Image 1: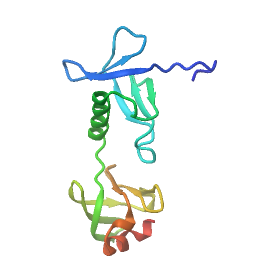
Image 2 (image 1 turned 30 degrees about the vertical axis):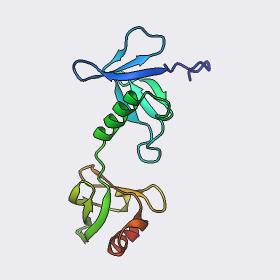
Image 3 (image 1 turned 120 degrees about the vertical axis):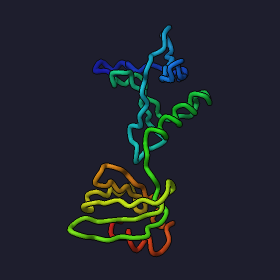
Length: 164
């Protein structure tokens, strides 16, 4: 909402890919689509299914979706694919090795995207999202998610218990 209480958000009708593969947003009341839009989650870790921002090519928000319910199936599929392809966050399924050397922690894990070895410097590189869910951010800025530590095998839970 603007300062005068008026809602400046447009209403999304649909999103399509144009001939060049760029996203175009069709908005109620506008004759021409907004071209080359970007889609982003407002709360990518805590509310993945809610609050999706559609932004113009300059990064200005033009539509804020509270969720994807009620969208045309084709539009919903485009948005979901765009969000999925934009964020690469392997989900840790098993920790096979956890060592510390010279104030660097090395973690080797099996994920839904294959085996990885990553490094974190401290507990500050771990963002706990709930009592059983956390994001590990490695020294290169990559993120790895533990969806539910309680669902992991005993050895994996033992390696990770210090972060929960």
